[in-house]
Length: 140
Image (cartoon, rainbow, N blue to C red; front, side):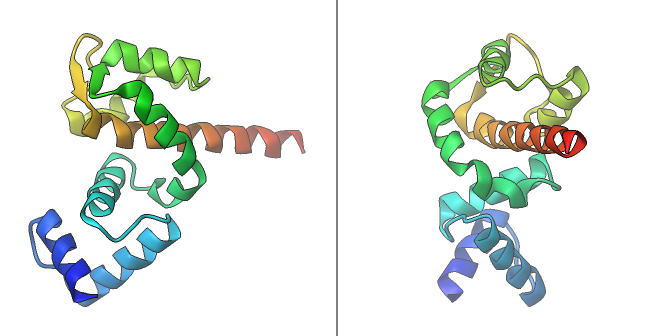
């Protein structure tokens, strides 16, 4: 238990209080993320990319692993947007800029590493699920 907290604090780069740790564990269990170094890194990246949506990660976890193989070690911004279009995700330019904010902004010809693109891909899949849910509720 304390070992997991130590790993999280190492990844964060600072000590956290008990309430912060309790909320983090609860959020990670809700999102079905493992309490490991890679799980903490993904959690932090998702929370930085989109603070509102990271709790929805469990809904799209299977899809992310499929897309991860398509990304390889990384790709250009243009290739990533083409991949999103194949997945029927067509956000506007402002949304794309917001997703890439922590990556230094979106540039079509820039190369982005896999570690940067996976959280953005997760947020894009959550975005797609949210848009589909809102369309269904309007129809009903």
